[in-house]
Image (cartoon, rainbow, N blue to C red; front, top):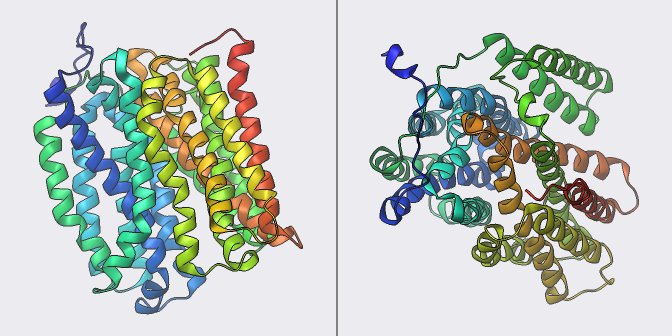
Length: 462
């Protein structure tokens, strides 16, 4: 068995699948990705009910979300390495099995520790899906239309974010929070069927998982995330600084350990490629900017602009709807124009939308707010497909898994850091913390645009 798995990659790999097979394979990827993204967003709405049922405080219940996100982030790069060894389709199928099994454990949980552990297993399952999905798309779509596949993947993620609150509200209107997890069973079964019957067989390489590096990565990310969150929440500066120091020290040691390795767990070899590193940093900054907006805007709408929860939800849907409506066009543009131009323009537009939200009049109409949000969303939509395509195409074929994992890392780590910075800003920026968040969203988006534009200055058009 192990000898079979360790065989080197085939010398010639087909450039994508024919159209009928491509549609079925992309359906499998889309269902798996939607499952993992949707389950992350639906839980937020049910947090008060869950906290009450498992007899915990609201502040402690945040670990229902944090356990998923932290496990997901820690597992992404090890999963990408295992994808190279065992095959991307196999890791996706394993992720679906873990995710569905953990969903059942979540529904059966009676205490917070039980639920947090089940959510962490879900997070690892989600990482098995998200860590290889971009690599699978690279083999599903021909190079000439790869941008369309990446745009469709971004559209699925946006749909998951947009549908999460609505799905949660619909389920909770007639059933308990446990059904938020139980509905994953039939949906996951269908996704698993398509994953078994439709995903392409991808090349495998005889790599070994570096366990010491995986441990260092876990310590680094756990220390940075938990320490930063503790520091941002003001729950103990000494503990927060200590955890951050531990995390940063582990990260420095990890980077030194990875230098010179041909297939490092942390892809320092890819980050040394200017085209790849610029795309990674651009993606990371874009998600920091988007979280400045996404997290703070509901507070701005409710506390400053006096919208009720229903109005707030309807107004904010302009963001994912703009992404959904523009994604098909952006995918085609990504196949024709380089990321150096499209991503730069997209983040400049996004930053302008955030700035216009910061400069809203004192009593704006819903339409005044929504068109500004839609402008920012359309700009954000222009960034992701070409930028993610640049990360995939600048990586060597034998490092596609590492590139795929780093695409998800840029998103999750950017969202995590953005959340920390929002918490810090809301606690320190007075008398207008939400407006400060919007100003920082605009500033960060413009920095991301400048980072993307540096590819033009360096003569790189990928």
